[in-house]
Every structure is written in structure tokens, then in C-alpha cells.
Length: 157
Image 1 (spheres, rainbow, N blue to C red):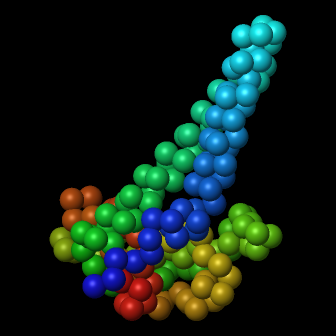
Image 2: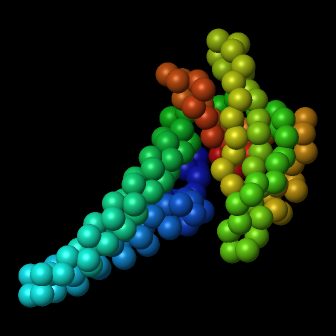
């Protein structure tokens, strides 16, 4: 059974994860370059700037890693449910100058409780494949049924 996209594909799809990783590396470079300069000249601007940028990048990267781990975990161990598309929405977010879209969906867990969720950002072509009322696959956490991911078509499991 396929396990879905690899970690690196998921990271590539997660804009904030990539953005955070770039900022983390940039902040660390400021620290590496700025620390010797600070000892010689007493100027701690690069060190302070490096700490701020690295902290922001680390926070964004950590949150992206949590989202990726959740998706991998749910793909591996989550229960499958039928999800109904509630809406297909344009977001205000652009990635590579392209507007990103999002699906809102609902599903029922094993205890017959209804939950709602939303997909991650989708390219316009992916979003155009779905209309309100259509049915797709959702994976959810059996211990916390409100935590779910949108899989889409059954062959994408």
C-alpha cells in the first residue's frame, strides 16, 4: 500500500516550511559570520539579527514539521472515512504568483459524530477537479477524530 508523498515532497508543498527553513539557515549564517565580528569590534548587530531571524525561521519550520508529521502519521495509521466537499474556496495566498485554493469538507467518524476540516493549499488545477457535494477520502485520528487530512481520490491513499 503506498504511503503517500515523501517527507521532502510534503515539505516542498508547505510554503511556510520552506520559508522557515530558508530563514533559519539565513539566521544561522548571520550568527556564524557575526559572532567573530562581534568579538573583534564589539558590534552585536549581526548576532542580534541572526538570533531574531533564526528564531522566526525555527518557529515556522517547527510548525511545518508538526503538520508534515501529522499528515504522515494519519496516512499510515489513520482511519479512512468518506468526506463530502462543502466548498472550494479561493484563498488570499499566492505561491509562485498563483492563487492557492482550499477545500472545506465534512466527514463522520466511527461514533457517528460529524467533523469538518479543510485541505492544505491546492493549485488551481487540483481545486478545479472538485465541486461542492462530491465525495473524496479523508483520514482521521481515531483518538482525536477532529484531526484529519484530505486525501482526495482513493488512488491517492
